[in-house]
Length: 139
Image (cartoon, rainbow, N blue to C red; front, side, top):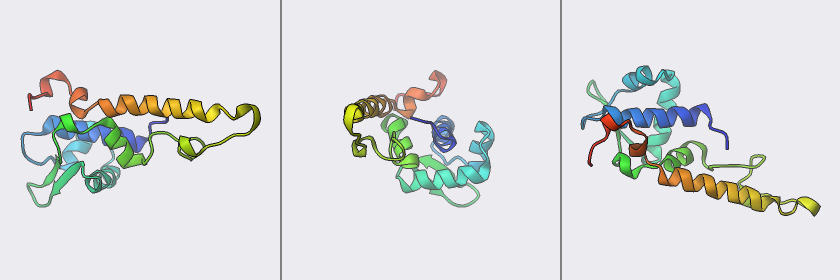
């Protein structure tokens, strides 16, 4: 598994959105400045996250982004899949579509096991788990 800049930025932006959240939207400019993310790149990422149902957006002077669900209900896996599609690939293919011949024929089993281990970690880790304690709420 390789963590792309897009994935890193997406997670940082969503964690920041959760941390800034006081019930109102957070501007992309504020998120970009807080996390040192290029604004143009952030707009593209936020669009992907909105299409995936992880964010909502509001236009206008008081506009910005809010989480579509509480941070306790958005997992790292949700974010990574929204940005990358698959959690892991082998030569660009999902692990369950790779096959080898001869002595390496059992290797796909290893790739699937690794994929499942990654999925286990990212699917049980929520945005709320990643927020510093001072930003967590009981919601």
